[in-house]
Length: 145
Length: 314
Image 1 (cartoon, helix red, strand yellow):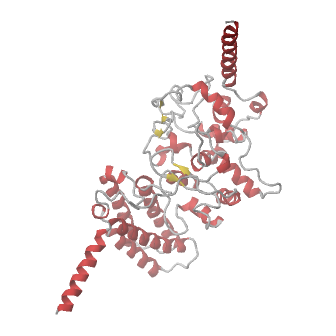
Image 2 (tube, chains in turn brown, yellow):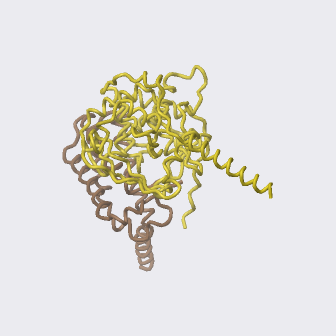
Image 3 (cartoon, chains in turn purple, cyan):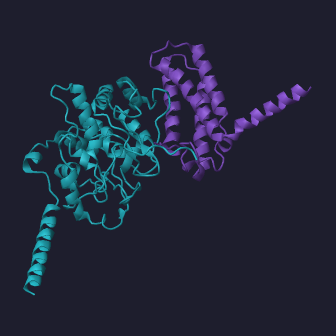
């Protein structure tokens, strides 16, 4: 019983720790997002064969990732300080920032809803999705040395 | 007190000579007759490539424009720099508010010499220090393409600059120091055509060095640190080092070309900041042009970062 209590409290602690550092959390989310986009990009570039099922799996994973993007939780006030490349603009224009996140989610959902049948269809979808990455990073991220 | 008189006289003479020399040296210089003779009627189709290589729309479209509206070059963006706020003007085909009334020679003088039709210096926020390296024929093609773009009425507001940067005439001296049609990087004889083509695109119309190279106290590009990256002229970030010693050192030529086409880095991060617009424009060029840019970036001398290291997290 005691062990169980400890285990549960440890889990709870781990759970809270996961939200203790929003900078690390959002970076992990973005890293995963990039990896998934990378898998799809390899198919578009012809480095990997087009496999409709595998592509759909990757798109669904991207959808799950996009749904986890909670701007207010991941970018709370004060998390502009520290080891981050988040631009101050995020906090100056939270509605605009959220809209950029929502557009990404909507475009990924659209791709999942009509799964690409061939490389060209995937290429068109990935162009839209990739454009969303750039559009958001254009305004809401800054490069640091 | 004869010596004092002499001294005063000398100071007056020297000061006067300095003023005369400064005035003469700062005078706007237009294209010479030989260069003007090279301007033949341009080809608008070819000029479209130059337009996107130069990314004219990034600064001259109305801020926030999307799609075809990006070809409406009404100006009005605010570039907030340490010298003050520069506002790119209306360069649409409007006769009164834009450049619709400009002759091809007027346009070439602006692009290659930084001189306006009325004979004033332009501020080098308009990157003619790079455009000075362009071929007159390409400038003529660009002129022809711009003639096909819409006229948009309305003048953009003027620059807001503080002393001494508000004295336009002083730019004449700046030009003598920093504007030259010579290439920045002298490539060895027998350098592949691809690298030469890339040099032209990067150093000339593409004006990559304007943001990717650190500047000295007078705002001139430090050619000894060409493309080494720099503290961004606007905002608080940096512009990356793109020499073979920078963040792109492990990228292959194909990786660079792919990034310019798709906006994805080899590890699938995406393009960001002001480069988003640049990448959109460069994506309009041919695969050969992007490959040439990549080949040149691999051929430039390596430099350490032209900006301070990132501060550790506090």
